[in-house]
Length: 226
Image (cartoon, rainbow, N blue to C red; front, side, top):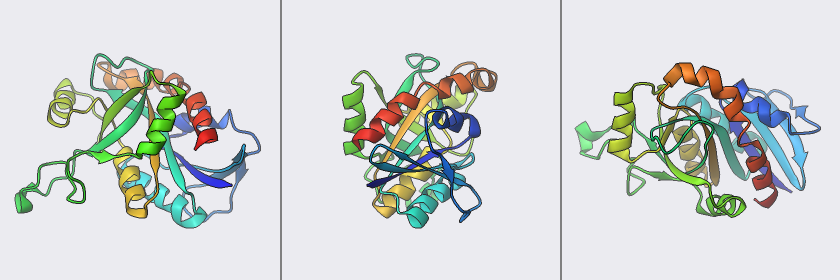
């Protein structure tokens, strides 16, 4: 039975998924964040709410890998749109992540956003899991996700991320999860639904719960074929 780790940053992102799961069991505490366990078909699911931001998400991913031996991680949640093509509640598959806060350029001349273990600023997600997700829904948008420890609201910041990194969406956990999975040789898949665009934080508060429900069936169907 394959072990799958599932991570969402916030309670609102997690609740929609919990409503679909049966037989949830809270595991004994090994970490600040609780882990919920469930069986889904022939899979063992270990699910946690990481908290907001790259450090919390990286910590949660490492905890699931080290403490429970998960063999793949699925991160689901909401994101902000950097393009008018991606409207509210649009679901995207993340094909690559840019950690736009990474910057060692002053000492080594490496371009902003790039870790030297990768050939470009884009941290790739797992190609096999990405392909399997697309096989379930070929119409899904493959996005580059700008990730950092800031809620992106201003039009100026959104333009910078779009123009500098070719990003389609933005959020605050993907880079931490992608980098941790890469370091451990664990595949990851990132599924996001747009909760805000030009409306910024006000729009986020109004739509986050509804947006979080958009991806639940996709994620659960994907787990069946991982």
